[in-house]
Length: 155
Image (cartoon, rainbow, N blue to C red):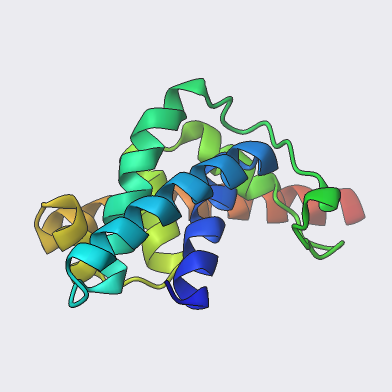
């Protein structure tokens, strides 16, 4: 399995869980699923495989998740810039539906094409676009709210 695929899986679970211990555990499971499927069919599209494996592992772990409450340790190897504000993302993670959260991670963070996301989930591209549009509107309004609060605090 290529390093880029492993990185994509790790990033998916980092942003999905905001919990380094769970992200590591889930990443290991998803990488194992990807590796096994790739052995059976070496021609398998990597992006589709990432979507399928991360979704499969997500469905097993997401019920235990305390969304919006990060548990990130720099000791675990996650390098987060000091000036990065995860506030809007935490808020989005709390309020977004599962479909919206996952669509943003796959499409905008991992840059997986909508066609591959649709194929990996067994849904239409239109459904992926709809979920993504709805999610981006939510995320945009949350980011806007944070910017407005910061501007008001400076005044």
